[in-house]
Amino acid sequence: MRAWFAAIWQRPVALLWVAPALWSTNITLGRVLSASFPPMALSVLRWLVALAALLPFVAPLMWRQRALLRRHWALVVACGATGIAGYGAIAYVALATTPAATVAFINSALPLMVPLGLLVFAGERVRPRTLAGILVSFAGVAWIVARGDPATLASLRFERGELMTLVAVALYAVYSALIRRKPPELDLLVFVAGTIAAGIVVLLPFWAIELAHGAPIPTDALSIAAVVYIGLFISLLAFLVWNRCIVALGPSVTGVSYHLVAAFTAIVAYVALGEALAGYHVAGIGLILAGFFLASLRMGR
View 1 (cartoon, helix red, strand yellow):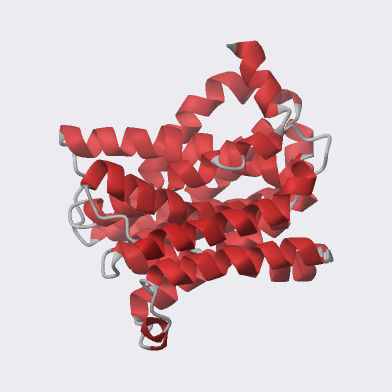
View 2 (view 1 turned 90 degrees about the vertical axis):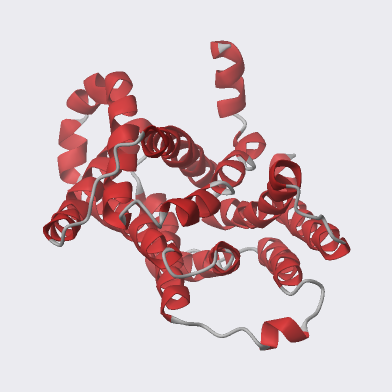
């Protein structure tokens, strides 16, 4: 099993679908929990679970690379503030008032924002093939949201929750660009653990304010199970895979895979919830996959 995992880890193209598959459950789950689980509590607790699961494996190496962490503390804090604290917490706040489908659509703007973040923060240009793949995939997402009727998109109106989601996505695009600055000598797991710890520190004052206003901490079995699942799979595993793909393949190619969230969400809703899979779903998923392969096929070869 370890040899198989190591072989897959060395082929990051084969991992591109993993994070979107896990994240396809996060938006729906976050929407369900929004009625009973305060957003800051959920944000802090999910990352505490992730950090607690990661530390036993990475703590000795973190101690040996502590000088590197101190030297690059500004990058670690910036990644923690944008990718850990900013994106997740703001998205959970938005889900309290915004339908999950709308949040999923706005999240699909991430691959379009990543090239801009790369240009501003890393000075990198995007290959035309990758940009074409991004646009084709985004067209597929838009087709699903429009239910096959382009006139539907013209009637979309952005409220406070939608704008907050857009800010959250922009922060994650910044994070995806900043991670390219990770020094190669700094181990990826050490870097991830450091950014998670930094993100938790950034979130703690906001959680304290939430608690001061009387927000509860749910302790029922379902809430605890949800936090453990989000912490281990949606947070830790998906985050590790996403970082691995960004470091190996670049943010633009990895960002295209984010459009797979919409495709997986439609499939999961059909299988688990019995929601109809209409023709526009099939057409949209086809465009998403076409754009994904257009951007990543040559990289896979």
